[in-house]
Image (cartoon, rainbow, N blue to C red; front, side, top):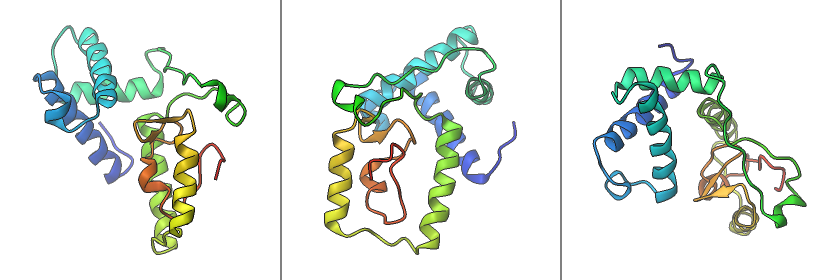
Length: 167
């Protein structure tokens, strides 16, 4: 299995560790995940277990995930269902950010943050940004489904931009 960066390697290993904990019967609370995140990860793990005939192998799981990201198995990724209020500003339906897209976005964000020395937006701007996020259908459990970012953090930094173009 090859990784394009150390960040990607760390992210995939973390994903594998969480999957192993779910496989071993730990609850969302024990792992420290929201119910939504836990359910989503369990659903992916269950698909892998069907593929692997009920056997969990961390390396096999990661290879399977990479194939899933590349669309090799031909499965459709779920589409985001937008609320009526979001149709005005989010007119096109987009797939949730894939793991590889989230990793790529993280790399770009870290580069932009480093260039600005992690400068933060003023408090009013942070609040304005996050209020816009809270009204957006792409925000699910504090995380943007377009870019994969945790918006409570992303909205704090001057260099960051909304993936839906709202701020």
